[in-house]
Length: 97
Image (tube, rainbow, N blue to C red):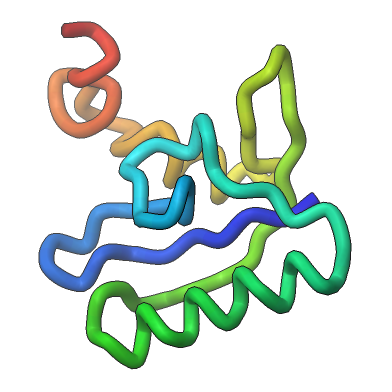
């Protein structure tokens, strides 16, 4: 399975395509189960890039674990979790609140 990720152009935050827009969490990212779905996500990413909404658009490998979408590669897990040195900032702080 694949999901579409990018960085929002206005603030650099890692985002994932979900439910017709860009979400700040990966939890419910739209999954591509086949080549046609991957092509659809790639087209969405290309249009968002051309519209200056996002940069660094990529399809990445993902799994569903306990009903939640999770990236496979460590790099993408870190992008999904937020900064690794300050738990009081970014996505970790939002989870604790």
